[in-house]
Image (tube, rainbow, N blue to C red; front, top):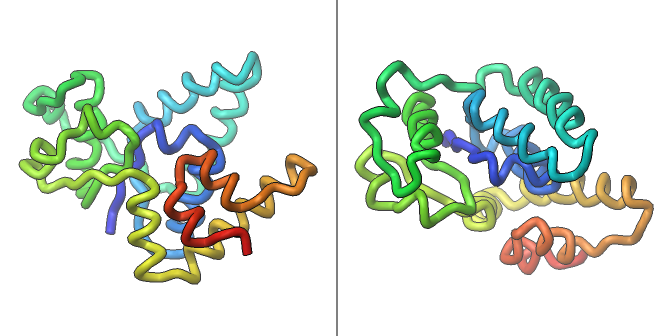
Length: 181
């Protein structure tokens, strides 16, 4: 399965690390475009003056780890597409160009299922797709989540409940399923 990751699911670090950890374990192939990665870099400015610089370094690492994940829509594809927010058509165009089965996004309103289905693309919220992947293959999803949890605890220097971390990452169903064990 190929999943196009929207910028809104790539930018939060914990969520990105879980999604890419699951992909690294072979449960799906991640896709994105240069424009999506650029949106991530610009969004990182919110965390302060070094946010964008850090994001660009992380982007370089992600590109190196996933060299075939970046897709470029062919000329004119975006012009024929329509979504409620014209600024999001590049995401759908990238999904089509990469042969994605679905777009992973929090932005349900601007990616109506009926419009995506016309292009043979589905839409999932991160919690929804991770739950599906966990139900199909629990061990690799749990391994990815536990690795991110351990790193978050190491970096923060604090005890951090898994369920609370996943809730903050907007993965409440996955958090409930995995518990704090």
